[in-house]
Image (cartoon, rainbow, N blue to C red; front, side, top):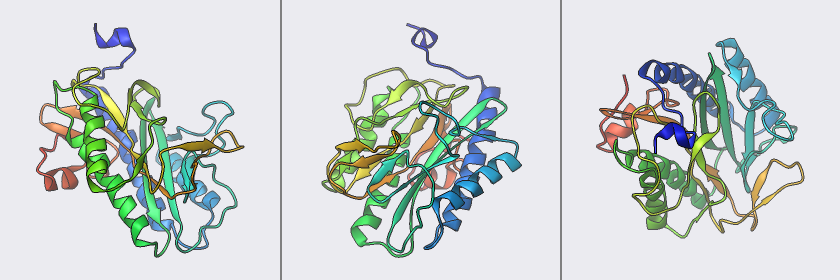
Length: 274
């Protein structure tokens, strides 16, 4: 069955280049926010910085007004036991907190989507290790993707790494996704699963991969704002995400400022950017 019959959007080379513009803006915005995170800053201040940077560079925030109820901000700001979709507001970040920041931008109709988790000052060793494991799992998932492979090769790359390093919880109800002319498109990209299943990985397919990992259970609860997802057991969580594609040379991470070159080559994975 052709990809288009499953609703999967395959882009041309020129369209992927346009996605890179949106992706780089997202990556640069997240680096701006990473540098701004400190004890005493509010999540609303981070949101304001993100919106100003996106709009001043010709982009439009992807998240603002998205969904039902409409999401009221430019970024998702999820602290401590909040995993994803936290709404920025008056919360003041304190020493020892962790904050997961998810950001999306649209440029000329094309989307980029990425997330980072940032320590606020000094954090406990187990929390810092959780962040390292989650970020590494993201890169392991993207590195597992090869042209002609299958979607769940990515899922297996994420899960097998996390399972190999500790008794962490991996969210199963929230997944990565296809991306392009819309922020969320088929196919879903689970963070757990056996390799060798799902759609074939081909040039022109762009995916957002986003492991969400906890120090406890993978079970979650939805808070009263109808957006924020928190761990059911109150354990700390981390979330990292990138939008990437595959070229004939290898992975190209569209939301990494350097396209993922440093991290991929450091892993011995050919860099597919241009």
